[in-house]
Amino acid sequence: MSENKNDTAKAKAGLGSEIVSLLKSNIRDYMMYIALVVIMVFFTIKTNGGFIQARNIANLINQAGYVAVLAIGMTLILILKHIDLSVGYVAGFSGAIAAILLTKYEVNVWLTILIVLFVGLLIGLYQGTLVTRVGVPAFVTTLAGMFIFRGLLALTLQETGTIIIPDKTFNALSNGFIPDLPVGDGSIHVLTMLIGIVAVVLVIFGQIKARKNKLKYNFKVTSTPVFITGLVFVSALIMLIITVLARYQGIPWTAVIVGVVLIGYNFMLNKTCLGRYIYGIGGNDQAAELSGVDVKKVTLFAFCSMSVLAALAGILYTSRLQSATPNAGVAFEMDAIASSYIGGVAVSGGIGKVTNTIIGALVIMSLTNGMNLMGVDISYQYIVKGIIFIIAVAFDVRTRKKAK
Image (tube, rainbow, N blue to C red):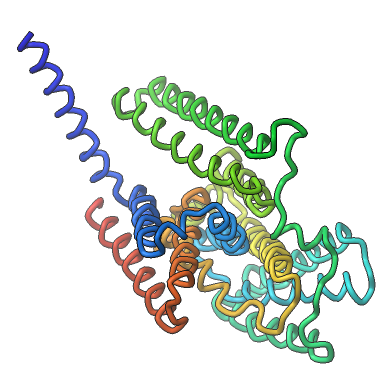
C-alpha cells in the first residue's frame, strides 16, 4: 500500500516537474496566454465581475475585430522584416469609401464590400511595387502612405463630415450575432453551443494528429499526462467562453469574420509553399533567393494582403461605429504592430504565428476594454500599453538570446 502511495507521489512530482520544465523551455509561446489570463482576472476583480459578463465579452470581441484583422496582415509583413505604417489610415479611408458608396450612391452592401477590398488591393500593389521594384524602403513608403491616406480621408469627408450609415446589413457585421436554430426555449443559443462543441472536437483531433506525426518522425513530444492536461485546459477555456456567449446572444459576426481570416492565413503559412517562402525570406532573404524563391513576388503579395486586410478592418470599424469619421484610423497601426510582437513575432524576422497574434490582439484590447470599464484616463491607457509593449519585446529579445 505504501509502495503505491510512493509511486503516485513520484508520478505527481514527475508531472509537476515536466510542466515546469515545459513552461521554462517554451516561455515565449506561453507568456502571452499567461498575460491574457492575468489581465482578465485582474479586470474581473477590479470591475466586480463586470469584465467577464457576457455583454462585455461580446463587446470585447467586436472591439478587437478590426485590430485582429490588421495584426494578422502585419504578422506577415514583420516576418519578412518589413513594416507597414499606413494601415491605420488605409482602414479609415476604406471605411469612408464604404460609407459614401452606401449612402450617397446607394450601392448594394455586398458590392460595396467587394469594391472597398479591391481598392485595398490596388493600394497594396502601389506600395508593394515601390518597395519591391523601385527599391524604396518599406518604412519610407508606408510612412508616406500614412500621410497620403490621412489626407485622402480628410478630403473624402471634407464636405459631409461624419457620415451616418443606416444600412442594417452593413452595421450587423460588427454589431450583430449569428442566428440561432429554431429549437429550445431561447434561454441559451443552441447553435453557439454546437459550434463550441465542434471546435473542441476539431482541436482535440488536430492535436492528436499533430502528436502522432511528431512521434512518427521521432520528434520530442510531451508526456501523455501533460498532453491530456493541455487538451482539457484548452477545451474547458473554449467551452467557458462559448457558454458565456451562448447565454447572451451567441457568437458575434465579427468573431466569424476574424475566424475565417485566421483559418485561411494559418493554413497558408503552415501548409503551403508560399508560407514556407515567407518564413524562409524572413529568416534569410539572400539564401531564399539563391534557393530559387522569387523574393519580390512574395513581398508584393504580403503588401497586397496587408492592404486588403486593412480595407476589411476599415469595414469592420466603420460598421461598429455605424458611421465613417475623420478620426478613423488613428493609432490603428500601433495596435496592430504591438499585437504582433506581443504574439511572439521575432524582432529579427522569420518567426511568428497568426494564431498567437490573435492572442496579442486580445491582450491589447483587453487592456483597453478593462481600463475603459474602470474609467482610466486615455493618457494613462497609452502609457500602460506602451509599457506592456516594451516589456513584451524586451522579454522576447532576452529569451531568444538565452536560447541561442
